[in-house]
Image 1 (cartoon, rainbow over the protein chains, first blue to last red):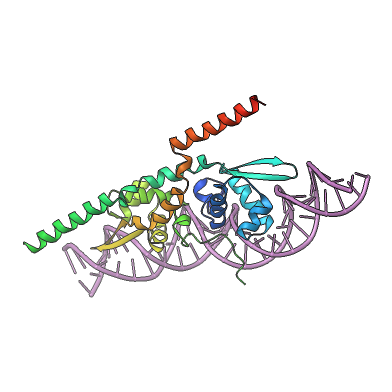
Image 2 (image 1 turned 180 degrees about the horizontal axis):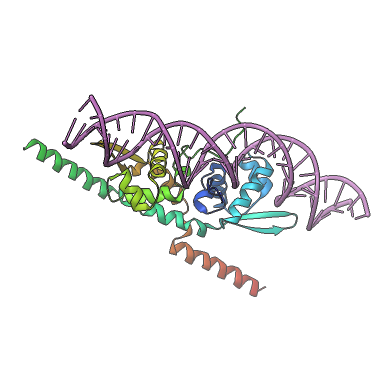
Length: 117
Length: 117
DNA sequence: TTGACGCATGCCGTTATAGGAATACTATGG
DNA sequence: CCATAGTATTCCTATAACGGCATGCGTCAA
């Protein structure tokens, strides 16, 4: 029945951080707690948009909320980013200098063999 | 004019890797080149789906193609994952053991101050 | 109690997805 | 030159994201 469309933004961290503004929010939250309005103003987005993005981030467990008076303070829950960190880590070898050296070494070998045949 | 909807999957690496199957493809390509049909079978997806996902990955520069006879061999271009790697790296401190220790140290301080007041 | 402040939610409209099935290439082998 | 293996593309449908705007709701101050 359910004709799959794109996965929900709330389905996992990967989908949640696909949106640039949500990444901005997470980046800001590294500094500590932020009430919604301040956060929205700091990032140049409307208050409703900020609330909506924060909702998504909350649903995937990337942020926490705490009520203080009439404001709600959001903070980072970086644990939720771990899956992304680990997945991307699986490609680390491709950026390592040592790998680059190995790679160019292999290229050189190929080059030499071509020239000597 | 353009009433923004969700950003295109081809807009950047973040959006491209939001789809699980595309992550699977990239994971597989770490091992080397793959022709479409083999890749599709290996990952249990239809050939058209594989082609479509590969198109997205190609458009954001995460894979390369090379024609060999009548087949097209796809290979990883991990350079395109760098932005993701760097962004997520900005949160690394939150998983470091040293940070955890610092964190609990701060918690202890707070705890002590509460108790001594 | 009544405002007002701080946020969350609802609704609307446009855009674009992912999957399935069918079809349109395209280079190769005979 | 033609049949075919190997891919890419098109059409279709259901789902939902995102932004703007308006509104609902809880909390605090006077």
